[in-house]
Amino acid sequence: MVWVGGGVRRRRLRQRLRVILQLPSCRRVRGPEMAFFDVETSMPQRADQGYALLEFGAVLVCPRRLVEVASYATLVRPADPVSAVSAASVRCNGITRDAVSGAPPFRDVADAVYDLLNDSVMSRHLEHPSTES
Image (cartoon, rainbow, N blue to C red; front, top):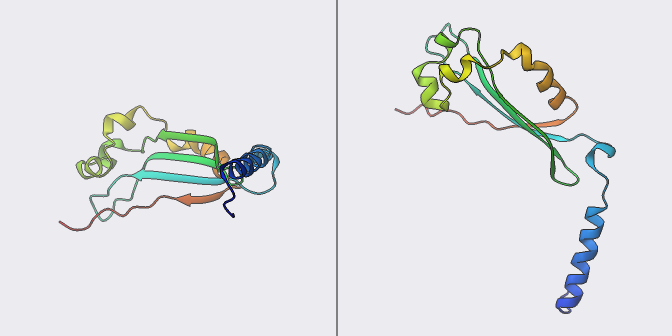
């Protein structure tokens, strides 16, 4: 943009804002929304022990307007919280046995997770725990 003066620049900015504000909402626009999600899991202590989901969170964003459309977050109770939530897990993510003992099992939240993520472009936050001592 060529600088002509403050008045011209402000008028152009106002015109652009009017256009942006008149864009249809994401629900009326064809195309998927973007889902940014993150999970927290247990830290297995034995070779025969798998990971257990402890928390799920997601934010659904309209890519045209860059606004939050929906969000969802829940703790998840593993099948066996006593063995799944070790001291290493608590150090890693701060989620305690007490915190997940009253949480719903995944089967109770699976439909909500599916409804949020279905037909969206997904992006997951991933951070590997440090393997250094």
